[in-house]
Amino acid sequence: MNETTLSNWTGCPSPAPTRLEGSRVVLTAFNSDQDTHALWDAFGQTGFNDLARYFPIHDFADAAVFGEWLISHQGPWHTMVFRERGDGAPLGMASYMRIDTANGSCETGSVMHAPHAQRSAAVTEAHFLMARHVFDDLGYRRYEWKLDNRNAASHAAAKRLGFTFEGVFRNHLVSRGRNRDTAWYAMIDDDWPVIRKSFELWLDSDNFDEAGQQKMSLAEVRGRLLQNR
Figure 1 (tube, rainbow, N blue to C red):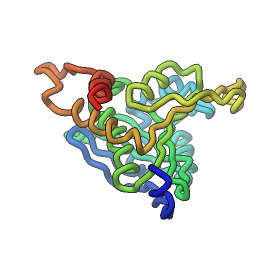
Figure 2 (cartoon, rainbow, N blue to C red; figure 1 turned 45 degrees about the horizontal axis):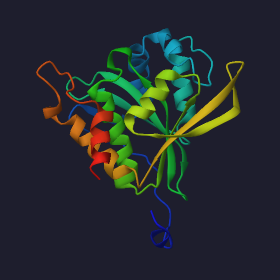
Figure 3 (cartoon, one colour; figure 1 turned 90 degrees about the horizontal axis):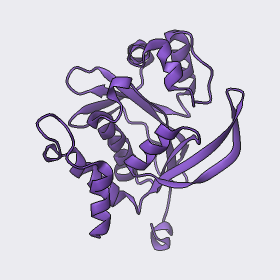
C-alpha cells in the first residue's frame, strides 16, 4: 500500500466473522456451549497440553478449565473453530488477536490442529479463509504469526502458509517458568495477491490425485508464481 493510498487511510473494522466457508471446511465463531468439549476431545483431551507445550499457558486438567481459558480471552481475541464441511467434525482453531484496527494489523494465534488434521487440505483452507477475510473483506495491511522460537513445527507452518520471517524478539516472555524468545512472521497487503493465488491453485481439485495426495506443494505453487511475475 503506497503513501498516496494511505493519505486517506481511516483504519479497518475488527475481524469478527460468525462464519467463513470453503469447499472442504467451515469456520464458525467459538461458542463455548457447542465447542468446548468437541475441541477438547478432538485435541486428545489432556493430550492438548502436549500440543500446546509452546503456548504461554499452564496445563489444563479438563475441558472446563480449557473452556474457561478460551472464554476469558474472547473480546481481545476472536476465535474461529475449524470444522469438516461434511460431518462437522472439529479439526482445529485459531484466533484473531492483537487486533489493531487503526493501523490495519492483526495476528492469527493460539493455532491448534487436531492430530489427525495436521497439514491437511482442510486446515490449510481454513488458514486461507482467515487471511482472505482480513485482506479482502476488511482491507488489512498486515497479518502476523508469532511463535516460541524453539517451536520448529510452527516455524515450518508459517513458512508453508506464506508468512515471511521478520526476526526474533529475545527475552520476550517468561513462559512456563522459562525464557521465551518470540519469532515474528507476517504477510502484508503487497504479498497477498500472490499468496491468495497460490492457495487457490493449490486447493484446486486438479492439484490432487485420486488418493488425495498433492501433486505440487503449496510452497512450489507459490514459488512458480513468484518466478513468473
